[in-house]
Structure formats: C-alpha cells, structure tokens
Length: 278
Ligand SMILES: [Cu+2]
Image (cartoon, rainbow, N blue to C red; front, side):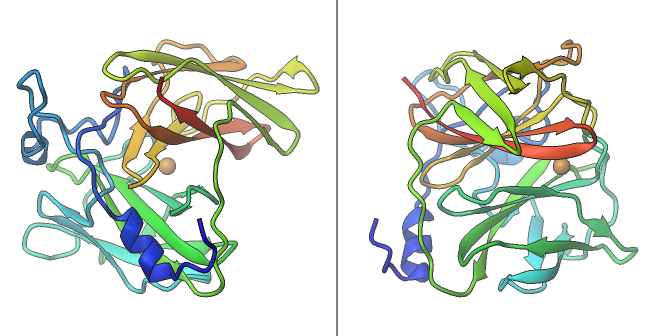
C-alpha cells in the first residue's frame, strides 16, 4: 500500500463492511448476542439461519451509542459515554470478566493493540489514560453489557495526526514479547469449531500464565479489512498452565489478526498473530 495515502481515504476504504463472520467459544462473552434484535437482523446464510453481525462495526446498536468527547488522540485522558435508549448516559453495567467495560484500541492496519479498563464516574462518563504510539487512524471498541440490555461491542474511529506508515502483516504463528515466546497452534476453519492453543515459553522453558480477569488469558480476533471484533474466551475447564485453549469458529474464509493478553509475574502482555483461514 502506498504510504502517501491520505488518512481519510485509508479509513474510508477499510470501512467497507462485510457481514457474516463470527467467532464462538465455549464461554463467549460480549459477542454472544445472537438472541438480540440486532442478531436476527443479520443476513440469512445458505442454511436459512440468521447470522449475527459481528461486534464493533457500528458506533450505535440496539439503542446504545458510543459517544466520545473528542476523536483526536495522542496522549492524555480519553473520555466517552455510552448513551442508551432515551439518549441519556448509561450508568448501570453488568460486570463481565471482572470489569464493567473493556476498551480496546488498535490502529486500523492491525498494529498497536491496547486493552484497557476505563473508570466511570457517577454521571456515566468513562475516562482512561490513552497514549497512541504513532500517527494514523485507530479503531476503538467498547465491550460491555448494560444492565438489563444486550451484551454489545461498539466501535468508533479515532485520529492521531501526523505522517502515517501502514504496516503489512504476513501470516505469523509465533510472537515474541519482552522475552516471552508465544506460539499459536490450530487453524481457524470456516464453519466449524476450531480448537486453538496458545503456548507461552521463555528461553525454551514453558511458562505458567496467571489468571487475568477471571480467565487464563483473553483473545481478541479482528477481521482484516473491516476490523470486525470477535472476543473469544478460553475453555472454562482449563487449569492454569503454559498452554491456553480456545474454541473458535469462523463461517467464512479470511485473514484475522489475533491478540492474546496473558499475565506473568503480575504483568499483562499482548502477543499478536496473523492467521489466514484454510
Ligand atoms: Cu478488558
């Protein structure tokens, strides 16, 4: 891709929406909203069943809207509200994986992933320190379950001014972060449940991961092209170990960026992979 592309043109090109891909796990959290009205509004596949639209493609869904205070980012406090039916900020959220809201930021080329946890004040304004490391267009996802409402992931674009150098990702199943090597085994199979295993080692020796947010690790998958957000959780019955298992399903072929959050010695790190479905 030419690096001289203007940010606006780049963002618009990637905003093209393709409906019909989702991931499911044994303990799928916020994306398991196939019973919601939005789920039934998805397209009908070849078998006559409605496929739920993936999360994160819209800034508003089921009456809930992600409203940022500002869309230009660099370093500082990022603030937003989630408005609900009636357009008032929502202040009641269910705790899912030990938090009321999970906030993920990634550049639209699939680079510089962050998973943070904003704090909400009594008025329903969420704030989090946010620093993006480079210029470009970023996608921000709020992943939450309003009390009494459907589990929802909303997405908005954020802009970091400056020259933008997009990164092309080639397929990769090994990721090194701060001396830890994480390897991904298993394939994403279109239309079938696909076991994935993420194994952590250091200097060739297995490393046992610590529980983080009520699980052995967290996996976010983003579809290349539109950044459909697919949040998958580990198998519930897995004991802590150096290998973390997930069950995932993608009903159509494609390229996905996978981001695996794991905790060792109290520090959470993220390993990233690029996987192409067979
Ligand atoms: Cu989170």
